[in-house]
Figure 1 (cartoon, rainbow, N blue to C red):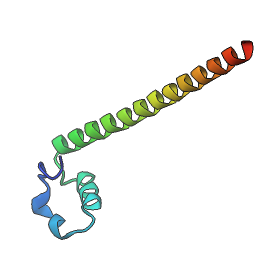
Figure 2: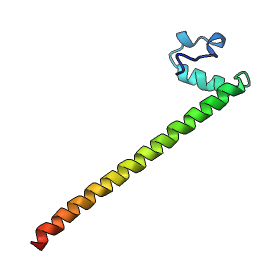
Figure 3: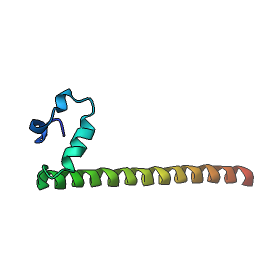
Length: 80
């Protein structure tokens, strides 16, 4: 998304910079960045963080279910 929509490109030497992420973060936190960019950036960041948390929770539940299935199979084996 940043490579396509980069309203900040005219103010810096992003193409020549090897650390364009730091350059973008510096710009988005500056007074020069438009509020619309700051809001869009914060919303995208929040969505990504929420998605990551949900994926971790989903993986934990999946692991718990797998462990429960293994336990049930073990218990059936011993009860025979």
